[in-house]
Length: 333
Image 1 (cartoon, rainbow, N blue to C red):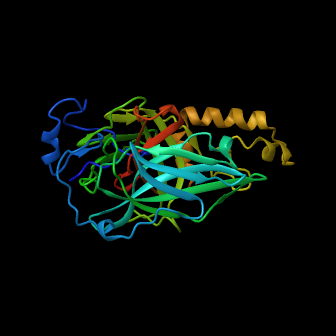
Image 2 (cartoon, rainbow, N blue to C red):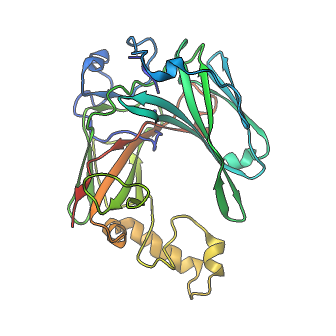
């Protein structure tokens, strides 16, 4: 299989404890033959890929309302006409993997997109192999008067003529994440995963709660309550969260973003300063608090790697995430 794309996609998004070749530096291509190892390194001309994916027969779409895509030297050039109030942009690769149609794999998130609002944002997407047909979902968000709106997704399908290689997700459906919880802190362990190579490789874990242990009902039952962002590791066990949502008081939840104007305007006796102080203390030691505040009995985690692509101009301006790895759903109360 050809090596296609990284989560970061946090992410992603994807693995915490790889039990073999954990430094990604030895037995390079011997791991490709394994039926278990998920190798997230970017490769070019690696192994012959399975061309039976339905994307191969899809008609090309190289221009939509906001996006124009062109195959160029170095990859695929995107020209994206951003609305005046654009606040977020993400380019997601779509693949068909063992019955999962249009599954989000590698994601690219340009940073500080608000700075380019109202302009045409142009960059070259390099994670491609010549002759392969790629399908992308382009997500744009706008923010006006504190209200964020997600624009309709726009689909691009194009054949690349150049690129640095991509990531092979053929073993994505194997179980790669183990999750446990001792009542205070969660432990996430990644199995049989070789992480991406490059600068600033990190892990991103999203934690979710629900009442069913048999499946995820993302619309009616499953809710996100916190993230962990940190250095890549085989095992991560920590109560600290990067951001989180407190469901204790639905009328006045602790903020998961610095919505200062909203909190100061509320006539509830709180000031932004004391709300933020409380929130920062909870983030340090409060995993159990945030989980308990959901009033749900089951826990699950989604894991992805984030990384930078050194071959890009100004690589720090782009956060890449691998595809997301799901844990089992564990019943803890």
